[in-house]
Every structure is written in structure tokens, then in C-alpha cells.
Image (cartoon, rainbow, N blue to C red; front, side):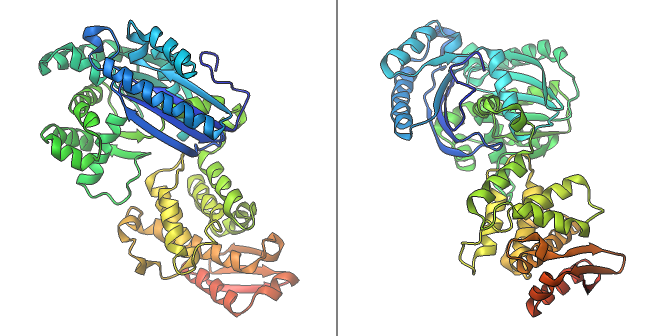
Length: 494
């Protein structure tokens, strides 16, 4: 990108420092994989933007804490021998009268070239962060920071209209101590910018720590079984209900439910009022919480165009396979072999089946007594983009059945129940097919023969190599697969 000090041409271990209005964070991405791999991640809540609207200057205590954090980050970055380290500052630094002086101080005293980016660039980077996880996303990205609120419309992976506002919680609190006055400011400014966007959005993607705290609260209150914030979908009426409950909760309860710092909890009541007005102005049926934002957007812009358009889920799975599987590359071959068993499935289902196949061998080194549990936990909690919660559980259920056929006894019923009965049955059949394929080969696809599904049978055609490996245990696995698909198993020999 041409507006910051981050070189596009060099890829590798990439460090990004984000000096925000409320927090200062350093993230180190391990290479430019299509799904970000977080090598290091540390945040310090400094509150640079506290009191900015009234004083027009950075908070003195916040500056001290931010400089201390940046000194630490510089030492860590040097020790990690990063390929590159970029640093950007957002709303507080760009709006403060002493913002430019602060950037110079960081450069002179610490040696970090801190670039103050515009609100429009901040919105664009946040939108690119969302596109890192959803390449074909459609909807409105709302990034709520400490001092600002950015909007970016995205359509089929392309960024459209962009608007930046001063509606971050720190800025709103500084406007007045009267909540009614604050709400009036929020309502009037959002009403002014709303005509710039479609009033009905396919989806609203929520970015920012205060908004993710709402998702945490909802998960905790409803005892939701999969505590992964990224790609957590909620109907709008449930979001509004959660907002109302948060508004009636005291600070101790919020701290317990959200597991966040007091500084974050302090901003939450204002953040929920901003979100309520957003959902009033822009109509949508559901919202999606995104863990990817500005920092991931910086990584996205560093990627070659060819990498940006690849499937983030499958690329992440292949990266894991390359690092951990015994026979990297065999997962795609295994998928091509077994897909004739599932010709009626749509492209998204086939995509999840491929992801499961790619991951089918990555936990081989785990203790055999716990391998199925480890692969289940790994798939449901992995740092994958381009996949929702149901998709995670589908892959995990398939992998669990790849190792154990009596998966029902393992105590994963609450996660399993995120899938329909039909989805669970399909995942179990995929698991059995993967198990059969893995048992029949020494990583040579030619050993597998050909398999297909007819109206009455699962037909496996074997050549001379396959005949030798089709022993008693393999036959048992084949019969179990055929039974799971409601067919009889038929083996033919070339």
C-alpha cells in the first residue's frame, strides 16, 4: 500500500502495530497465508483518546503508557527478526493537535515509523480485513474504535462507499455527561450518513473490541457451546435483546460475563447505544461478528492478487497439512476419490468435505487414545477464515468419525447439535469414507481403486494393488461405510 511504511514486495513474518484511541496492539503474522497465522499478539489498553474532544490533545497518561508499550514492542520485534514492521495510528492521533508531535517522538525515541492514517483509509483497511475472512462478502462493515466509527460497503468482494465518523465511545462520552444529549448526537449523525448506503443490507459485519464484547456476553448468557467469536451470527432481534440486558447490568456482572478489562467495560454502555442506532438506521436480518479488522486488512493488502482470491478455508487447511501431515497433498487426492459417493451435495458441502479430507491426517502424532478428541477440538477451534460455526462442527464431526465410529459416546452432543440430523449423518459418512481411504493406501492414490454410489450399492473397483491391501479390517470399514449410506457394499476386481 502506498500510504503507509509497509513494503508490499516483501512477504514473511510480518509485524503490525496498531495505535488506536483505546488500545495499542502488536500482532505478528507468520507469513502471508490466506488465513492469518498469529505468531504473536499483545494489547495494552492506554486510552490515548480519553478526553480528546474537550482537550484536543492526547491523554497524558495514555501517551506515557503508549510509549512504554511501543518501546516493549520494538524490542520484541527486533528479537523476532521480523521481515517487516509497520505501525499505523488511527482516530486519536490523527485528530489530536499533538498527534504529529507524538508520531515524531515515537520515531526519534523508539525508532518506529508511526504513520497516522485517515479515517477513510481506516475504513478501507477494516473492510479488507473482513474480506480476508469472507472473499465474496456482501453487506456493511461497521468498525467501532475508541474515538471513531467507520463504515464501508462491500459487494461481492469489492469495497464501495466509505464513511468515517467521530462516534467512538470515547468521543461520545466527551460530548456531554447527559446520555440524552449523547444519544441525540449519535442519532443525528447516523441519520445524516445513512442515505450514502443501502438502507437494507444483506449483512452487517461488526468489527472492534467493544462490539465483540456483546457477542461474548450473548455466548455466556446462553451457554453457547462454541466460544469462537469470528463468524458468530446473530439475528437482529437477539442482538437488540442482548443490548437491553447489557444496559440493565452492573459493571461487576459485565466484567464477569465478558471477561474484559475495566477499561473495556467502561466503554460498553456507550458502544451498545451506538450499535442500537446503527441497527435502527440500517435494516438487516442478522449481524456477523468479525475478529478480523484493520490489522488483518494490512496483511490482506500485502498479499499478491492471486492469493487474495483463493479460498481462505482450504488454503489454511493445506497450510496445516503441509506442516503436520505424514503425506502432504494426499488430502486433495483423497477428496477427489470419495466425492463420487456424494454427487448430490452442493458446492458448499463439497468444500467442507474437501477441507475435512485435507485435515484427515494432521493429528496422526497425537496419542491414539485421544486422537479423535484432539482432532475434534482442533477443527472447531482452529484459526480458520471463510467458515461458520456449523461448518466447523461439520468438519470436526467428520474427522471424529474418521477415527472412531462410536462418536456418540464422546460427550460432544451440544456441539453436535449445531448440525441438523441430515448434516450429522453426512459428516459421519464422510468420516467413514476417509477412514476407508486412509486404511487402503500408503499415500498412493492408485492403491484406492475407484468408488461410486448407485441406487442400491456402494461399488468399489480394485486393481491388483488394491486387491492386496483389501484385507479383513478394510472390508469391515467398507461395509460400515456402505451401511452408513444405506447401501450394500459390492467389491469388484480388475
